[in-house]
Amino acid sequence: MKKLPKRILFVSSESRPFASTGGLADVAEALPNELNQMGVKIDRIMPLYRKVHEGQKRGGYELQRSTHTLQIPMGSETIQTEIYFTELHGTLTYFVNCEEFFDRTELYALPNREYSDNFNRFLFFQKAVVALIDALGQPYEVLHLNDWQTGMIPLLLEKGIYGTGRGGHEKTLYTIHNLAYQGLYPATNLYKTNLPGNFISQYPDLEYYGQLNLMKAGIAGATRVNTVSPTYAEEIRTEKFGCGLEGVLSNLAHPVIGIVNGVDTKAWNPETDPALPANYRLKSLSGKERCKQALVEEAGLTYKKETPLFVMISRLVDQKGITVIGQAMEQLMGLPLQFILLGSGQEIYHKWIQDWNQRWPEKFKGILGYDSELSHRMEAGADFFFMPSEFEPCGLNQLYSLRYGTIPVVNPTGGLKDTVTDVRQNPAHGTGLLMNSYTPEALLNCIQEGISLFHHKQQFRQVRQRGMAQDVTWTRTAQEYLDLYRDLI
Ligand code: ADP
Ligand code: GLC
Image 1 (cartoon, rainbow, N blue to C red):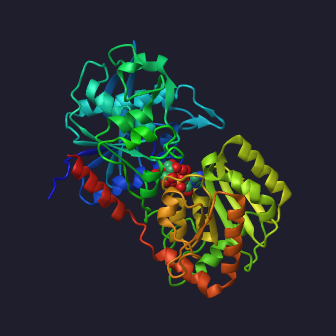
Image 2 (cartoon, helix red, strand yellow):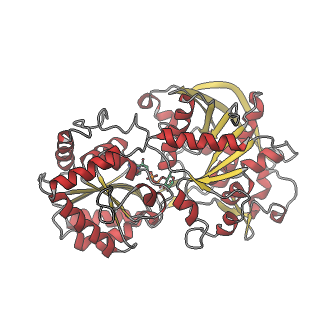
Image 3 (cartoon, rainbow, N blue to C red):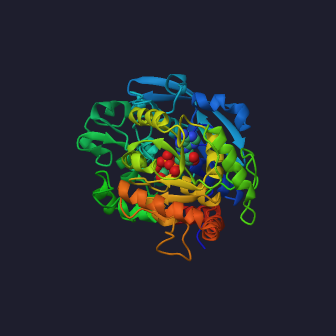
């Protein structure tokens, strides 16, 4: 039997309940908690954003200041950081403090404008991670890195934060959650890394057509690389989905493997969810109808039991297929259904949604913003959930939908393909509706099919219950990560 690593550090730019913009935060919360419960010793580290301070009461945690104050070189400058920590649900989390970089309204961007110093912010974070490991005096055997904000860590482990050499004895697992965000910056920033030499060409792992690419550095530098579904693991080796890194991804010594994310069943359980007006379970769905009525009324629409309710909760970015919804909207609104959407992101989509609110006030309600509790009420109250993503590394909302008896309508790409089975192609095992192409026609076709299914009550209930019975828990996922950690050492 392979040995278990003694200590693991999970490095992420966000984690619930502290600060979150998307699915990475759900994973960063659930996976370490699950592993600690399984007896693996895994700590977590992330930046100390303003939101982490603000969330203390609501999140049920209290920040404590550690004795570690670290000096982090950024080129010729030195910036000081204090390390805070808290222990929640069995996991110790460290926070890297730096008011200049992290005491801001948002994590990465204001609407339509990325913070211009994100390279500095996350280089600083990664250096602080390495500096803290050294200061703790108790080594970590494995570092689990996530997305571009942690991609330089393999290089920093080897060269050290002053570039004078460190050894890099830790093993690293680099998980790609979304290849579309790569952390691409001008090579003129190289001096801030303190790496020896002035030329980006000396660092082929980091170099991408003359620029710094932190995603590439993570992929090329880590001991092993994985992503969040088997289908996405294959897709990213192609030109269509590889975002320019398909070559690097195809030539790794160990092929990228895909591990589907799980659902945190403590947070997402319709039987106990405190955010819901009524709880329900697989064998007794009556509470779900009460959730639907409450949600429709909360949205200011008129509740009609016989009208199917479609919802969508999403970052409003191109990836998520809002354009396909936009192209289908006129016809969609002609169908006997209601549609509630919650999201925030690109300004253009905010405008679309404001426009739809005015045009179809009886059938559509778009809510702009980020609201976790409302997202629970929507998963519970809906009959169908839209996820027509152009690409989707894993996707979590379709998993929450399955668990809440809400039928996902998805474009079968990445994790959506791996987790939802089409009712039409597989009537005995179907759990959702799959678009046969990334087009408004295919979406409308699924919606019509959904409406018809909604009125065949027995079949509709069976599909819902099948989804609710699907095993989407973290136990299986955590076990797969554990096997990977074992392989690493
Ligand atoms: P991604 O990480 O690409 O945004 P996922 O489906 O993996 O997509 O995860 C999205 C997560 O973020 C889910 O937990 C979802 O409920 C949440 N989320 C996204 N937008 C909002 C919003 N506007 N309000 C509340 N939760 C949201
Ligand atoms: C990314 C992906 C999403 C995935 C999440 C967590 O944000 O876009 O598909 O579920 O990471 O892995």
